Length: 154
Image (tube, rainbow, N blue to C red; front, side):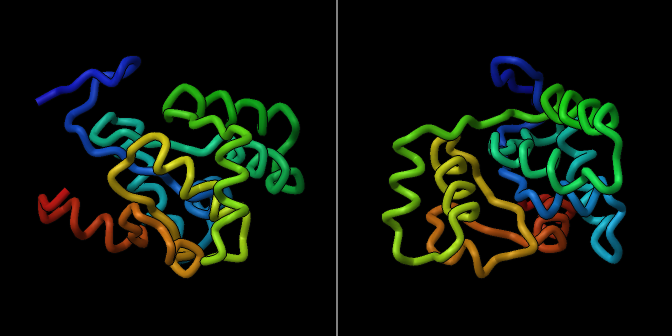
């Protein structure tokens, strides 16, 4: 069954927030993580699931890939991500809430959690589950998520 999410037609209601490290694995062909990252991203591009990115993920990607990609290539990457993913804006209250959370020590992870809560995603996909121990949203590694998706559990 296809669902409308306001700007895309989806195959189901599943929404995931993809952590920055997964996008970088895909863009930079980082082994051994590339294959699983590619599979998750392609599911989002094919509208099988709704892929969400925190707005600061785009900034991080633009900065981190500066040694491997030209400015024009990085702009194209950001345009492509904006076309294929729901971008969740970070606001002042989300930053304050993340800063007040004593259960973590990484602001970026805290903001990822706040974005996931704001968008009411089903899952967070990351290779850094330790950074998300305080998350109310269920966290999966790429491999765990793909396994559950292939079993039809997602």
